[in-house]
Length: 212
Image 1 (cartoon, rainbow, N blue to C red):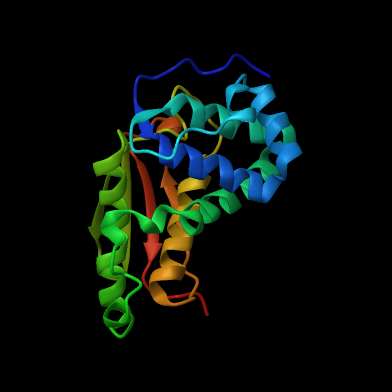
Image 2: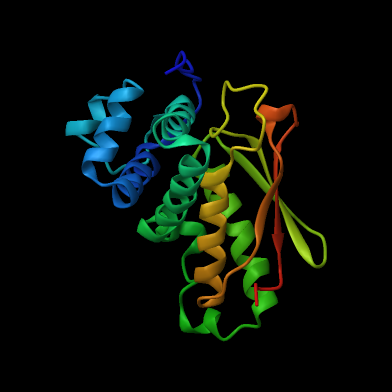
C-alpha cells in the first residue's frame, strides 16, 4: 500500500471510532477487518477497540487510511460498496443514540409530516458531528433538496488529486439517517464536491422526495 496519511491532530470521540470499527466488522467479518487493520498499521485495534467514551482520540487519519485500505483490498468499486454499507451500519449501530437525535424515534415524532421530519433529522446529524468531534458540518435547505456540507472532513484527509469523490461513509450514514427518520423510506444522496478533488468542502445533495 502507498504511504499512509500521517496523523492530523483532528479527532472523533472514541465512541464514534468504536462504532465505525464494529460496523466494518459487521460488513467485512472479523478476519476481513483484521486484515485491513494490519494493512494500515492500526494493529492496536485488533485486540482492543477504542473505549466507549466521548474523549476525542480517534484521529481523522485513521478514517482516511481505513478508506484507502478498503480500496486497496477490494478495489475501487468493492471499497466503495463496503464504505457505503459501513456508513449505514455506523448509524444503525449507535450514532442514532447521540443526543441531537434523542426523541426522533418517539411516537410524537413519527406522526409528523415527512418534510418536517427531514427538516429536523438532517440538521440533527450535522450537529452531532460538529458538537462531538472535530468534523464541522452544516446543512442548507434548497426547497426540493438539502445540501449537507462537511467543511473539515476525515474521509479524504491528506488526500489530493482523487479521480472521484470518496465520501462514501458519509453517504451511507445519511442514507440510513433518512431511512430511520422517515420510517423506512429510501432517499437519493449524492456527493457533488469533494475536498480531495480541490473543493473547499465536501458537498452532498439530499433529495427530499423518497425513491419510488
